[in-house]
Length: 297
Ligand SMILES: Nc1ncnc2c1ncn2[C@@H]1O[C@H](COP(=O)(O)OP(=O)(O)OP(=O)(O)O)[C@@H](O)[C@H]1O
View 1 (spheres, rainbow, N blue to C red):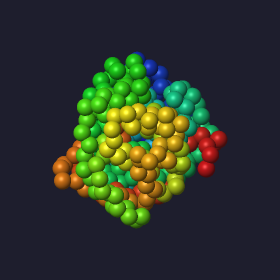
View 2: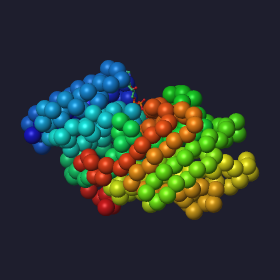
View 3: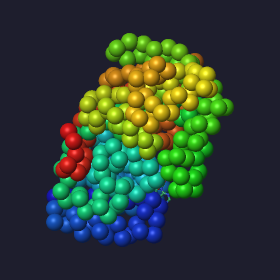
View 4: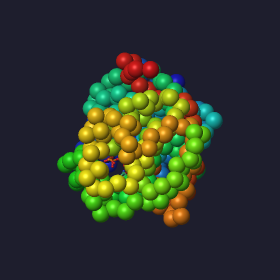
């Protein structure tokens, strides 16, 4: 059995080497061959993951923030042989780890790797790239680029929330058309958000119904509203009842085509992706991911 560990040392900071030693020690009982690959720049994590597929590895474990995890997923998704995939969260938000109930403490996440079983998890394909957690379009999505690393470290998910709130106040709605198997929605929105899991931007109650392998996108379109009405959405958001709000269009679908007159930015798993239009579809159970054995199914 062969395992590849993909480590982003800049996410682990001074503890990165400690984590690497600990994971090697933990995996030794299960895998005869263990290779640690450290990323140096953008694109490395994706390239290493593809190498692991071609080299018929049994497992790939990504250690880093959501950016590293997303890259690794993109490196795995197109390949015929896809090793089981593990996640050790070393970032600030770690949405995907949250959604899968993987402990946010890296040592705990490593130590339970031994008891974890791979479970099929849905992956989203948007145009030619893949995502594991969330797509966003609109003024709020664009605001997330303004969050500095220092703010993320200090405030965590709240940093995104505050930038998002600012963009509501200054932001302009965008006009979009959204097509899916259940129909078509056209109108003005501040934010379209498509989630594959129930944890987005650190808010675990955003899409309570979303399960990691339900084969569906969970899309929320926040309609253009007056400022006082926007304030009424906050309690619904915190209670996980956003989908019931009249100000929000909630769509469950296996595909989604979004178009607009303008080339608005699309945020894919927290990173800037190609602008609109996009065609997205769910690839059901596309990756086998190590999740804790107490995970609900
Ligand atoms: N050795 C390295 N030194 C500095 N940057 C790196 C290194 N290896 C990869 N990167 C860059 O790190 C970015 C990915 O970071 P990732 O999101 O995984 O971690 P993070 O920034 O610590 O997490 P978060 O975004 O949650 O705070 C990529 O843009 C990649 O180009």
